[in-house]
Length: 565
Image (cartoon, rainbow, N blue to C red; front, top):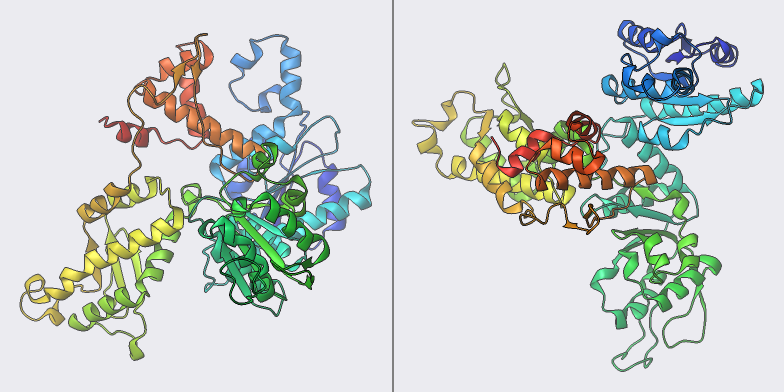
């Protein structure tokens, strides 16, 4: 039985759920944010929130508590009506501060309340427009509720190569990919370098595709343009100079299985046309041949580029883009965007690099020297990372002790190479931490190393962390170039990096985040000058600071970057 809290100013939705979802525990409905907060504090095991948007409640119960600024502008009655029309979104905004991972379905039966953009911006798990038809509304709502609850119950297997974590967003992403893997349509994986696109294609999508053929991966950025056609479609002997033998292409090798094309944007327009024929008709022609071949593949493509922009500029065929199923494109988040999972990711990746042959041998040597009990058969010894000394010795596990300042440095680092860079860093960290302890055991542990006190705890020196991070830091923009040049009309001309995101709102927030960070750098951290540039009001620095907080920008981190105390 799952516990569901309904936040609504009437009993309409509570009665609907009571009638059609009796198997769940429905808490008494909360009429406003205050009652919702009290209910969540009292019932700590709430699994899901159903949240209405329009609240016809007294002024004192409306968010925000301080309405002076809102009511001072224009007609007071209209301002209060606007608050009531969107009160559910104000409640969701407040809930996200205290319960960031609590699943929330935003719902309304009003046609004049658009939900999509605001629901995505505030990280609602889902949203729905109800129809005032009890049966249809109950069926739609039940499908959403059961889907969300199922994702929370069915946690990822612990041995999956990609670490999904426990956040609602990542579990929803895993569920979505699992559904797409079983379908016949192509899948587009978006995300920065090192976010795990090829790993997910190979280890997650292909095993769930229910196909018996092989997994074949091709990085199109590594193949010369003049050889790409032969590599993909195969070539007949004598088709061109150097074609001394007939060779099958990756399409033939992937028949019955999954073909993963990384950096799909590198495909020429002519080869794009041929790939379109493969997707439409399941046929292709090898280079130099007149005979068509039949092929059946599950196609997964990945790119760092914005394919929609490439279509607009004529570098990518629109018909192929639509065939690639862009409506279901999946964006893999960067390491920086998974801050809530960072501690667990650190532990997961440390254990992973500890199983690499070289580091595994170092760990086993250290354990043997210190009288610990490594596993039999040369298996990797379990290791974990901690920020405090464990209370009791452990002879069967090693604990790498990370100073809180080092943990913060790792969590706040940009990680432009994402998980690939993160894994490489941790591998180096283990090596540099263990080598001297193993090679100079008698100097580090005078007397008999096997009698060392707490050998299960290995401190990681902050200096080692700092020395490994320093070469990977991205260079800062020269002074005067952070924000951009004067456009001659009282504004600033700036350039941005547009990254693929899961929604247009996420793209907008990313661009706004870049703007704030550059202005902060350009104006030396002066929030008043930023407010003057953005709002024409130097006294509005507090508004700028609050918006930066909402965007997840850490002012302390920006100060450190500038070298401020």
